[in-house]
Image (cartoon, rainbow over all chains, first blue to last red):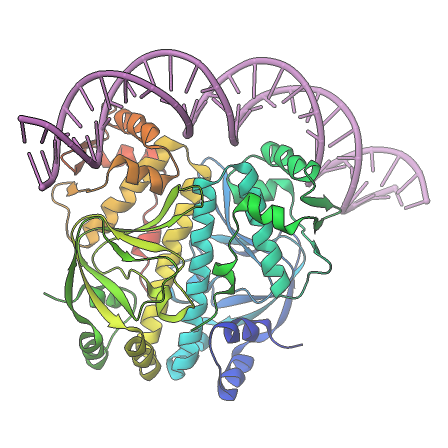
Length: 237
Length: 237
DNA sequence: CGTTTACTTGAGTAAACTCAACAATTGTGG
DNA sequence: CCACAATTGTTGAGTTTACTCAAGTAAACG
């Protein structure tokens, strides 16, 4: 199996054989994390960063009143806690939403590798810029779309991202999220997500059963969401 | 005057004299942009990136229905369109909210400089990670805070950031934003911003007159916002 | 000094929330 | 493999927050 981190980096920057070797070398083998376990905890300063190899995870923050906001869903190839590599402390937690396997790189090795090879530093930098673009679309989603378009948009994004990782078959893919988790990502309540999801179903746009999402009418779903996939394809110049 | 971009980069990474020289060399002199003019337009692929030297700008996206979401306020030292440097096309526009002066770096020069000097690539990368942290707090703000706490939080953030740039005197600073622009950043309507701002005033937390914001009770404002400044200080390890 | 832009206020409406109960599904120990 | 527990999903009724529309006031600008 090729390293999904390599795939992610090569999507934004050209890597040499030496670059690839370096990544393979510093990237340590798979560890398994159980469902619901935290991979990263807010405030910590871990000695290594984690890369998703398999499964789903969510990045989130908890407010003093106990409410939660998910700021990203993490799929294979995604980096759980890049901030931890270079910033003072992690500003968020990451929880495994399914059983997850992760690889890790020590902080020191990552900093060393990117100091030695500017091509790698550029690759991580550019991957970061793509992540920023995704965060910006989330801000637009939360700020300016109603619940219906908001959910539709998130489903479109997840569909596109999962497709890229090769896990979509006939417009159908595993979506192991509870309605409460969707609500925490969308800035809604689970009750409202439930009702709005029903509307998307009765209108024939999607089907969601047994943790599996089927997109029945991709075009109308995209329209409902005013989804523009450009920000995801974002590959390097 | 020292280059504000250097200040920004040095806040997250140590630069050598050569690094600083390189930045100074590729960074081209000041241009002035008038109030309300676009600095970057969505979909374009500009040949250089722009760095704020003076004034206020906003990064925003427009939806098909004409509504607008501001995803960042840009202050001196901030980079207007880093994504444009390396990604296929800009996914957002940037507009000058006051008269603005900007410097620019050509795409080619930036890519070249960061390829030659990994320390610079790292610095830009790390600056990007700080930007990401700010975007995440905006997501939390939009998703999980009501209008009152939301506005309070934005005011706290702007206060902290402007202080860092040295433009705060006695808890007072210039805030050249209309209520409509605040609304577009906060995912609210200008009418609701107006009423909520009045509440913040009558409760004695802030004063906002003549485009000047005075923080009357920083502690209570921070509490109302559940503001935790950690994500901004975020300096390198 | 007139005109545009920004701010303010009121009244009615709609989207999303809360609380509470219940059904269905999933997971677990015996 | 069943029985029970826990989690997740569904529904109803009432409430609240924020929105819409519309008009009027104040401030900024040429």
